[in-house]
Length: 295
Image (cartoon, rainbow, N blue to C red; front, side, top):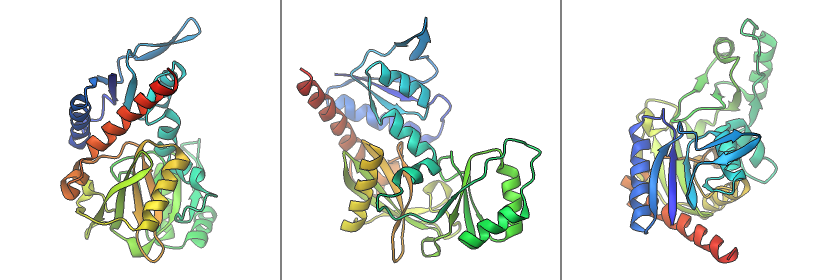
């Protein structure tokens, strides 16, 4: 079996490098001939009106968010983990909530930000007031595209909201009710092959964001049946082979974000669960099952 780990050439975070190394290690241990390729090598292109695939592999482990390359590879019949559509949904936080809405998945109340195409446009007091009336203060504001807890803000007044939106108005963003019970605290759940495999509690006493990248500490935690079921359902709706789901805690736990390319260095360290091996086994089993079905 041959596989390619497709990476983003501009992601230099150490946790990303660690994830790539761990997946390469575990896939190789399972007998997969795997290589790592940065996504600046034009692994797919359109020439003479046709899509060409320059990947000779049974699967691509898609560690990027490039929906165009992903879509082209899939159109050429390449199996992606995760799929291009699932990756695109998770890469857009508002699209994630829209996809999960209507399926009984608890989520914070969310408003879509009014995208401003004019850099000289003015955020109106009325718009900000309406958001405050609907969601209350403080309020969470998120750019729809972002990782590692970046591009996520907490505003306490209408004036702060107007100032922030004036800065990010030309970016896609959402506004969200602040879940006070989960301030600086959440649960990261890893779901692989439709099953919640492990979880860690993340807490940050200095920041409303619990991310380890922002100083949060993590410890292993058992997953309740209700939270496991909620996370597994969310992964199935989006169509994910692998993901990390962030759950806001409190009397009524809610899904905050779904990450298709979730890092797992801290998860492996605190839980002792070999996340990379579980994901590698899922990939190999999926490819082999596909071979059996299709001859």
